[in-house]
Image (cartoon, rainbow, N blue to C red; front, side, top):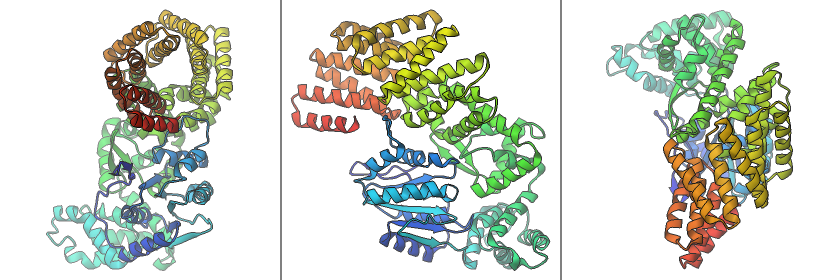
Amino acid sequence: MRDLRRDGIPHGNLPLELDAFVGRAPELAELARALDTGRLVTVTGTGGVGKSRLAARVAARRSPRHGVWRVELAPVRDEEFVDYAVVEALGLVDHTTRLPRETLLAHLAERELLLVLDGVEHVVEACASLTAELLGRAPGLRVLAVGRRPLDVPGERVVPLAPLRPEEAVELLAVRAGQRLVAAGYGDDALGEDREEVRELCLRLDGIPLAIELAAGRLGALSPRQMLQRLDDRFRILTGGDRTALPRHRTLRTAIGWSHELCTPAERLLWARLSVFTGSFDLEAAEYVCSGDGLPADEVLDVLSALLAQSVLTREETPAGVRYRMLDTVRAYGGDWLEATGDASRVRRRHRDWYVGLATWCELEWFSPRQREVAARVDAELPNLRGALEHSLTEPDEAHLGQYLAGALWFHWVGCGRLSEGRRWLEQAVRLDAEGTAGEQSRLKALWVLGYVAVLQGDTAHALAALQECRREAERSANATAVAYAEHRTGCLALVTDDMPRAETLLRSALHRYREIGELNSNVLMGQVELAMARAFQGDLPDAVRLCEDVRRVCEDHGERWARGYALYVLAYAAWYDGEPVRARELLADCLRGAHRFRDQLGSVLAVELLALVTVAEGDAAEAAVLQGGAARMW
């Protein structure tokens, strides 16, 4: 994703175009004019007609001061998560109890930017409500929506997108299929003697870009004439010979179905099973979720590659590595086939199981040199993790898995700036009853994680209620681990409410419990840092330094960076207090780098505020005022 900067201002997240943009000159001009004169413009049209690509092309040519930001809404299944998706796309972090819409209103109020809402049709009511409120309170905002239907918001300008004109359709097919046709012996003139058949094929497909892309994926294996004959046979069956009786949305579905029929049995099977993924996925997930019952795991890669060559899938490079994606229209077709096979429940359970396993691995690897890799992986997998959470929390007898998953992702909610969403899932999880020992343990973990999240949001009453319930139930069931975590987070609550003696007592007791049960991870190290803070704020800096130097050594041994940042903050505080501003600044710079990597706003604001005091000590009052002002805004 691009993150261009001008004058230090983030300038957007539009994806780079990976292949040539064909035609559409009049439509590009019309959409640009609409954006010049209106604050809300919606591009509408049938599925697969190229709405998203056109909107992205026009948006990339705009240059509002605070950038162009695209929100991909296709993976959002619950309208409640539309606001969260916009917050995420804008890269915002909010550690308060504010609703995400309040965060958006505060952020956008004084900014000039273009927001592209891509794929609004299935969450149109939530998008309309959000758009109307944002436009009413953010005068510098423009919204470009993309969907099969308008938002029906006052002031909306609708730009309907028609299929490609015949010449453009032929050009698109030739461009996309060029390499395949040349490789198949068609020579430099990719269309060769089949130009008329290609033109007729594009007409049969009504000039719908997605249908043409799917057809291009078949050229080389079939000649244009063979493809045309097969497609004509399918149209004749559906319409009794009158091709004009087929509306465009059925034309696309027919083209998808025709492409599906040309797939091998293994390709059709994988296509159907891949429909359970939300958003993108990687090869390992596909191999686990989609294998079995006719598709061995070691054959998934070859079959997936075939679907990729046929444009059923797209490939993308991300910070989490190579990932694959299926367009919504193609996914919906596969989903219908999956239901028809009677295998949908089994595949969804495997999807849930994979992401429960992934969360378990990520929680363990958070305490390792792979912390940044884990953060990027969970960011990429968040749509699928949401799907797994929703499946577990709504399926009978599976509440314990939802509670486990919500608790296992504590590091993501707390360490990567997603407190608000984490709290939403945790509150839903702890309201459910889960039977058995596993269910009891999962709910206790969800309770202390909920308490931790509420502490960091400054919601003292709810934090205390969750932690007290956790400790009470943990003592009743003799769960020593849950007792330790409940006591630890209660000590953390005392720390942030300035009750230092109580914080010290609780944190020392929790650390003793951790040692007794052999617990060592980022949470335990944070408990030691929090104890160091309590000692430092009571005036015992040598003890605070001793505690944090020990944390620093353990972090270096394990490659841990998140808890290390907080230890550096305490060491910087001690250096500043002892009159060593140069050392304090070095420590704080290191601390800030780590906090920024993890989108940890609390760690960032603590470091910036202390850096202001260090800057005063160095004699630069004006720079210190700027830093203090920044810290105040962050607080």
